[in-house]
Length: 373
Ligand code: ADP
Ligand code: MG
Image (tube, rainbow, N blue to C red; front, side, top):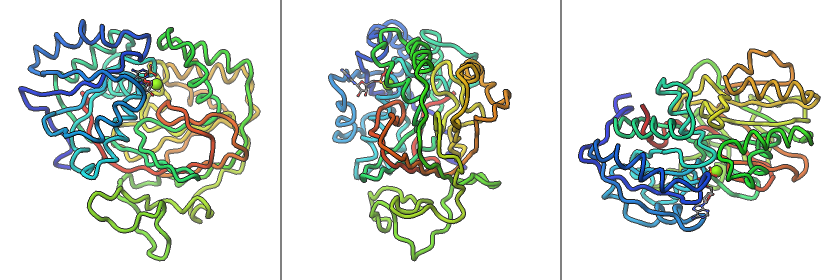
């Protein structure tokens, strides 16, 4: 892969999309105190765009001419980067625009991609200001590489592009329930986990997946021309979005070579494509930016609260699979489908809430670029 790695030009012009409400509300102060002096030394000139409301960044990157910027930097949590990725994918020229390196600087309470990039770069596990310093240093170096995205589609016809993960059940409930503790910073997830443990629930549904198999390539499997194209996307007209060639339409059964999980009662389902789910949750230690894999975790019902707590504590070091818990299953996949029996429980995409309904997704290898160490 000749164009797999690249380096930002010098001088470099960066558009910084900053959410002043993210995390505990210190993103702008931290940017000016920690980030800007380092970037100035590295000849990276910044223009700050402060978001005023949800969807503001989405509209900005969807509608405006971005050609003057060498990189788009997001100083916030994962939620704002999710807006940026999906805004870019709505552009008619997305194919070219997605070649522009994106960069995440942790300013939010959920900074999973920043923690993952820090981990891929081989740095020690850190949080808060130290994580911000590491990520700023990575931006100063300016190396960028490709990142996989996952295309998610819902029964009601929505389609999203996701860089982090899709969840249902326990962890998603923690993510959304703990929004009210945003002022705690990342400690909101610890408190939220303990609260959700107290009212542990079971979620019913059917989970299916296409195992990753031995070859780790990311090119789509050959498509049977007689099967209809999902999402009504025919052909490859310029600007048309990538086709989900691995998926059957949600109204139809999954393809015959998929695996259907026999159990239909879960505590959680999480499809993650980065190593970290939060700064202190190393859920998929084997994940990399362009490994062509969705790392699918599911926890079957019947697990005790103590066992669940042990797993979460182990996840801070990434050793949860070593516990050999019979309720926790892990399988690398290329595509998955989740069909909840009733519209109960919260679903999340990259930490953002989604109404509960049937969802399926597949990996699209190397669909964007990201600044990484
Ligand atoms: P955090 O990790 O703290 O949740 P995020 O980056 O995920 O930070 O941001 C959370 C949400 O805030 C996003 O969904 C984003 O759309 C929204 N948002 C962006 N700008 C603002 C703003 N000025 N006021 C309120 N919400 C905003
Ligand atoms: Mg968030």
